[in-house]
Length: 123
Image (cartoon, rainbow, N blue to C red; front, side, top):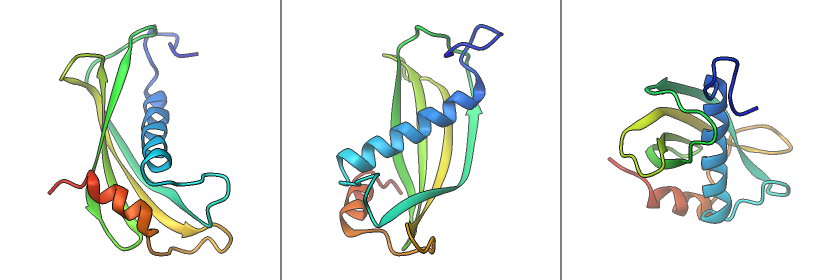
């Protein structure tokens, strides 16, 4: 399912790459327990700019940074690259708002996650 009827990775698939990149970082560096954490990030906004088509089995890499960090929200920028290439095939932004899982109300970003986000914050 990687390639669509046009023989390249479909546009919507890049959003999955973005989500995977962000969540992997939050899990591995921020200590997020996606199944049990009382606070989780909800995607409230996302966008993607497509630069070049790619197709399976192209090897891809992703880069992640934070461009805005608030009390309960964070704006990420993600780039997707063909492995070893510095020109992105696509790039975009995702905004997470951190919410109490049960009450679904925004809350402050947990300290361990905030520390992980500060590590990749650019000005």
